[in-house]
Amino acid sequence: MWFRERDLPDHARRSLARAVAERVRAHGGFLTIGGDPVLAAELGADGVHLPGGPTPAEIERARTLLPNGLLGISAHAIHEVDAAFLGGADYATLSPIFATASKPGYGPALGPGALTRAAALGLPILALGGVTAERVETCYAAGAAGVAVMGSLMRSPDPGTEARRFLAFESGRSDRP
Image (cartoon, rainbow, N blue to C red; front, side):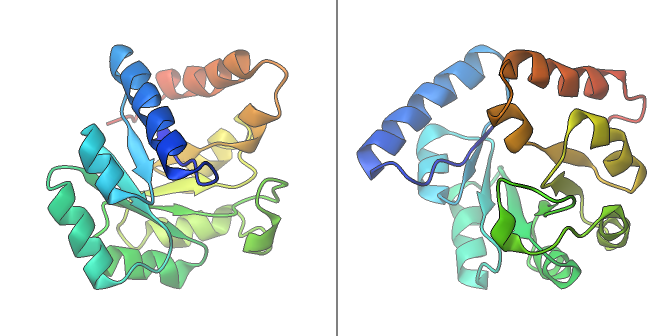
């Protein structure tokens, strides 16, 4: 679970994050906090995901606050994936892979070929942007280590069923670590 609420006032966001953390833990899940290493440390999260282009000091601060946590960084181009790798990230999200209504301002779709080029750099890559259950296999075939999904779950009339479609694909993979 990636908690990435950005719009609520701080007190409400922290309260929601605590509630989400409790639910994730109750179900044995993995929790990553988006953009806030302090909150991640307070919650004992499993990781933190920084926005693209973090400074070395921001990366070091995140590592200090979560010494055993995963550190992810957002990327929207191959050179940004390379910078994340060189900066010491454990993984990067690359987006948008496909056209997406959720984040139209991040440029044109990069396509599965970008996943292949990014994965060749040696950093695990999560495909993000326009990922649907029908496109998951394409992402993995192109070299993605995983997928991240927002829009297809948020727009679904039945997000539980939609989430199970993604999970069914994951549980059927024979090359899972």
